[in-house]
Length: 191
Image 1 (spheres, rainbow, N blue to C red):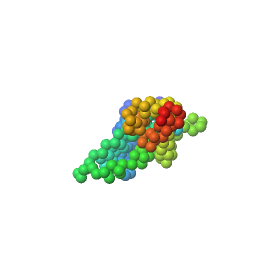
Image 2 (image 1 turned 135 degrees about the horizontal axis):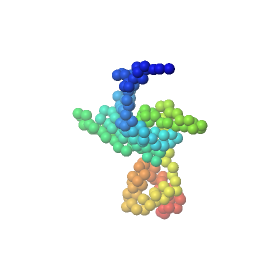
Image 3 (image 1 turned 90 degrees about the horizontal axis):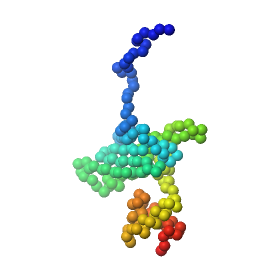
Image 4 (image 1 turned 45 degrees about the vertical axis):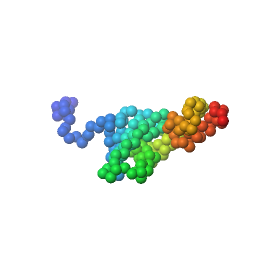
């Protein structure tokens, strides 16, 4: 069987309908006008029961919220809020709902998971939202963590101990208080 040169063109047609997509800084426009930017599609890390892109950025109306998966947990690493003409008000800061933004980001970029047979599949947006919330709320209180809580607590000045634990583990004050109570219960702290 012989083929004409036209059967195997050396260069692609001018518009073949395909678009080259970069794996870095890929933008996903959302219906509400926001944009989610994925730092690198190839940089996948474990998150909860699946895998997702390590870094993502949410942008909307002068607001930028950066997310990074650290130790399997999606964490907010920065929030930037730029004032429009009127300046920033306290209510502008209260309107930033990080949990909602996290759900939006991870349902937009997707989370890959595996079936019991090892087949890869992508979670639906609703499944991805639930998986992101589960991963964010899952902070295993290991013996190692409790020992570290005790070290930080003992090393901090009186009156700043809870804040030191909260800052070290990037948790709210009430979570830091639970960690401290657990360290006392396990005998790593006295008094």
